[in-house]
Image: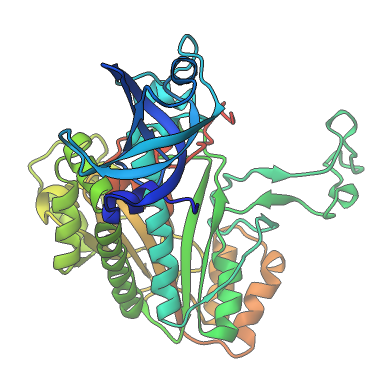
Length: 463
């Protein structure tokens, strides 16, 4: 007998079908010679009800072993359900218990648990409705991302996790070393002698695959990365993780306008795909987590994003009848409260802010003709703020060299990056999407630690 997934059974299963399922018991109840189990295998929000008749061999012994959390295999015949809330149920002929769960110690009993508590048992929280829905939506988002780029002939490239460069220049890097901390080698100046380290130079966990993606775009035209990135930022907010996933497309022969067009099309595509493939899960979030989830998704799909310059955004913020915690002046970076005001209150839809001051943006962004701003763009969305950041890259060698020096960086460390401007340079652009922020925005979850299976945060590397 072939094993069936519960999601498919609930969708298409018909009475008199013989099948086998495997999963974990969510609830058990007994009634007049019958026992009813709710079993879930992770494939859907819904459970399949299992009916156990007292004629089943060793009925009493089996029931004593089955509690919430136990893993079981059941084979039997589908029958039309007599109860409310389900169309069909499985009448058990054979029931096998793989592993029991002691009800005295199993922490996921049938009651509401706070997300804070569930973070302390991340090895079990995926069995709850909320986290089952989160990780199915996360999976659908990842599938949509690959599908979007593959349909447009982008090449998926695997950029290194260990790197010697700081793409963002912020210095929030995790070091990678093979040195013995008890006997760190020193130079004559008492600096660390990295020549004796594994890579013979300082090395770090990557903060972005962008620079390497640019290399590949100079050969394949359109590429994208999708992988883990790391920031050693000592932040305990609901918006930050030390380890997270990034999606970063790079397009040769592309300017800022093309970059913005692709980013907007990209977000619309993902939302549409998730609404079509995770309907039940999204309805769950709309009912239990955030009643604007479906409305927001539909609005993103159906409406054009607002576009305005950073300069105009600052003017709007200065005129706003709102007292911000951080003052708004031209030349300073927008804070989350400013970004959310623009998206939530002023325009009430996603906003693309362009042409930021050069002094607050990375060295690789193309300097505008006014020499005060760069061809950068951020996409701001309600409740999250910035969800995508991108730019047209600086393709002119002389300008890029000056930008590197102006930001206190050593051009020799980026010799290979500068070479791209020496040999066949072209206008090119790209953007980065924080994958967890996308999932958080889509589901309405309040804390980014609840949209990744095992969050890495300051003083926390469990599981």
